[in-house]
Length: 600
Image (cartoon, rainbow, N blue to C red; front, side, top):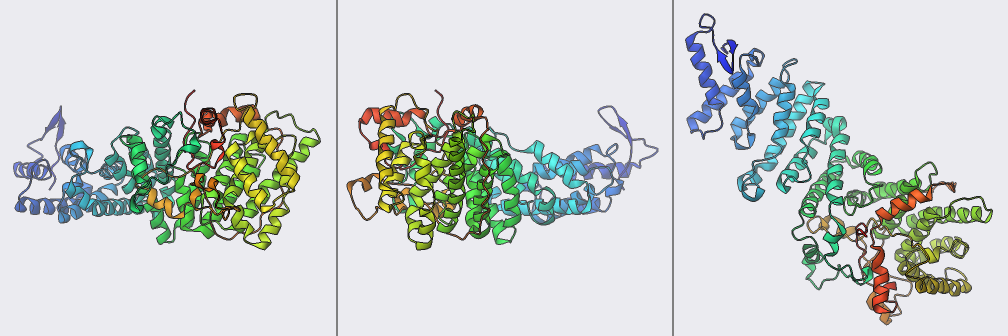
């Protein structure tokens, strides 16, 4: 029997008239048995298991008023130290305690969540025995939480609150972060996922984003401020194939705690998404991810890596997720009800995505380009009518740059299909690029130069257009140090620089060195300068042809926000030009740096 007594100050006193001395002695022994601070002999371990099983049958008799020490020993147990039989008996006790009406639900859930993180030793690393047991422990923790949630309807809501308060913080050690997130995502399955899956994923993405924005431009370029971004070759480092990209990453992020944590967490999230795909849950998970991306990532002006969870998810199911993400971004850009910053960011995202995702087909690329070009065409028509008060036209310039950027990667692949080529040649590039808004003077010169080179070779528009375009570039170069506010560049899916999680991205990522340009058979000297941007394959349904133009967006707000969002330092192009005195800076980037502009 579990004796009851009366509370007495800091401890408990027992009324001798109510409690038999033998029962009191047995209770004290039971409390001592549940003390895990001392190593147990085999006989003591067997008694431990027996005690836990007995308590499981008497949970309704346990009272926090009289049995505080007993409950304290239960709720402070670290299950990582328990042997298998003991672990099973203990978790059975916990699931039964949680079901006691209005008593121990929160304490039981908190104890299980506390065990998401294994014991840590020197240098905040997991001991080897914990590593070997991690998968089994996580499985049992998740099963216990699912059992409690099935038994107690209130449990998922309380669990969400506990996980929210227990989430790792920015400066927690990597081992704690990885273990907690790995176990937490184990709950995102079946009915449990339906109940709290969206919350779990949102918390993880928030953590990824927080780590991401704390990796600064200086962390990435490490003293290379004076080099033009187009001179920086990070992909081909003369390493062997197995180490490709990893050595460069090691140099970039050696000793950077946030990058190392983010890298490890990206591995965990990618493994989770892979598991969802294998179990047939990816479509539901992707719908949740889209909503989270829209709310938490799209407008983040310093995001460099966390957006790649969308890229990887799309690569797992190109025909559904891959296509859906491209349309999703396009619709945000076209929707005049969206705020200007979201629209500008969305068109940058879709341009970078279509360029880099190898799994997106040429017909998909062309269908989306048509929507963007049609919007640009209608925007230009409205300008001719004098129906706008916007002085900067940032969304228009962003759309033009995205179109040219995609065609730098994908023009050749579109031209390889006669039917797609015919559709491409029907688009109004000449009208848009020769418009008085002069997008060729505002967009990034390296992209304009490469686009015009390929377009000229392909005969994309009239010959007279090229002369005017070249004059525009020359004029722009001559005023590189003033006069024109150059369009800030944002390429969200620039080459991925995290070494461990790179293996999930690289197989489906198009580097510039892989691109077949329209002039790729020329074999001239300029080809040696082009090393590192690219594109993909899939199938697209028809898009709604209706394009809405919003000509009254607040460009001042947009320009300020996009300046912060810029990933390319304003001075890198100019300094490169000033230093070289030539046009080396006009070749396509070997690897455009995925970062925010450094502080001025």
